[in-house]
Length: 380
Image 1: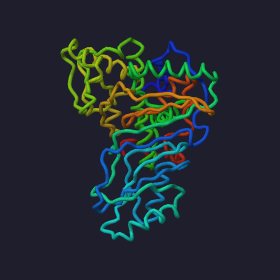
Image 2 (image 1 turned 180 degrees about the vertical axis):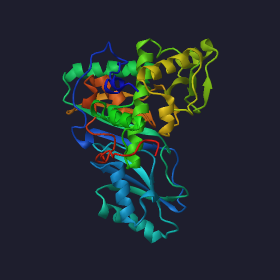
Image 3 (image 1 turned 120 degrees about the horizontal axis):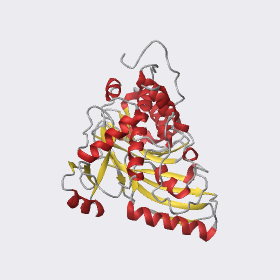
Image 4 (image 1 turned 30 degrees about the horizontal axis):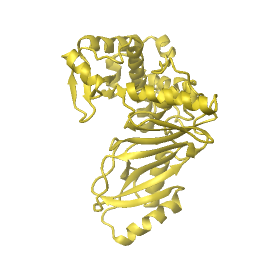
């Protein structure tokens, strides 16, 4: 692989609302200025061997809470499950599952106090359920985010925000990965790229997986950016792998004219590639675009295969039907919901139009980075 390709990452992403001026401002001025709440895939039924605990946390990563819950109940780390990671610098409400076995009512009544004595969180409820929560067991997340100290004030700030919100409600938004996934100035991608080349090794499996996935995320962003720049975000391409919003079903776009109408009616979206050898590859014109992006990156599919990055399809267009804005003493309040896997910073960058690195204060729900090790490669 050409080393210069690795160094020269292209992190620039086009705005969907490039013709509309932004409001500037600051994210995460306080934890209460960035509020996120999980939208569950299902509710706890009240019976089973897994204790579902819904908590609200601030200035803790999801993995911090996972560790604390395991210690509070004397459980192995992997006996605690969760559906998705939440920002550390936020007021985040999410549910965890704990494999506690068959327990009595007294155990359930005491569980919230036991948790709050161990971890600085608020327990909203605790109920039993039959299965462990696993990654992806959620519909999405609901956000209430205050953009503090906007560069323009008063009526002008609200007017700009309202114009952007109206545009995005009508058109949707490319499903870019946020800078917290890629790292400051692409740091996660660069480290993941080294792992992918096989020059370095990292024994922390979770972090190694995150860094390798950041390379896939970077390539997905480049695909979406190129599609947007070529005016192909608002149109389907022949050979696209499309996804139905209502059911999640995937199919190949063969009758472009008919499916374009469904796209404009917001029934379906094209999907973007998360490159890997088992990914369902697009065909015809769409497939050519996917291959062009991969070729420009300098990454070979064989490298992704050796790193066990199997590949997948990612929703290409996010709809923002419930997007709204308001104003308070602190600034502009933006409310919206996103499907699982989508990033709130992708929405906020359209409103603020500040450098992307200003949107992420830390790597995505990370622990301190473990050092690389020598003498091993990605095939070990």
